Length: 326
Image 1 (cartoon, rainbow, N blue to C red):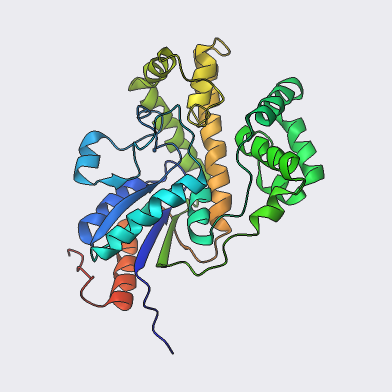
Image 2: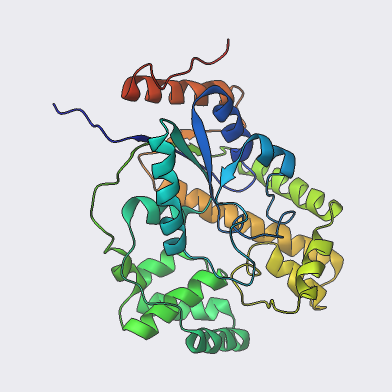
């Protein structure tokens, strides 16, 4: 049987607030791993508190590639991510190390490993018209429209997931074909790395919800609203930009527009984060190749270390393996 000679890579995935960053940093202490962020919000500079971006001290000790690489006025897509991450991974592998990709943006992981179908570029007039329609009839009604046009996409997109609903309907209008059909295209080529997938999947959802609420309150105490005020003060940002549509930032922007009381803003921010986590968990459960770990079960670190040690040892031999401390 031929030996798979592809270089190695590790994906560390999980919903928001599941402890991915802490585990990634610990694993990079024990093994020759270089960290790469897979997060659609961490790419933006000046968006630190609301994204739960690792602080400067953490990033200095544990550098993450693809953090702070875009201005919030710029868009960033799965295609952009794939174009950025492949050279980073190639450089890490060429240095005899292993890229550890850590994050919760499932679309980015999928685009990286499976390639991208030939989707149309964003069309601003179409997006603006869809956004106006949604403002009149609501996103659940737009979701019902999508269900008639593309039932497969509608099943995996939440009825209030404005960004993905808008994109699905935009693609249909621009191409006349369902988004789900176009996404089945992909590139078909073998992924250039052999991958170990680790997924943090909480068994007790209420514990994750508690952490989400605690983290959101910590963000507020750290000055999240002041961060959003500073973004608004620039004058060149608006609510329809991908950066401002990120979970938490959208709700903060609306609150500063006077659309909610402080209590309502907190509740909406926590709810939106819980909905994001739900979508991330649904995506993770669909990936049968991932090794699942409950982050709330004692001994997570040891189990993850064992999985990585086994992967590196079996796949690459002792030249890549660093024994974990006792």
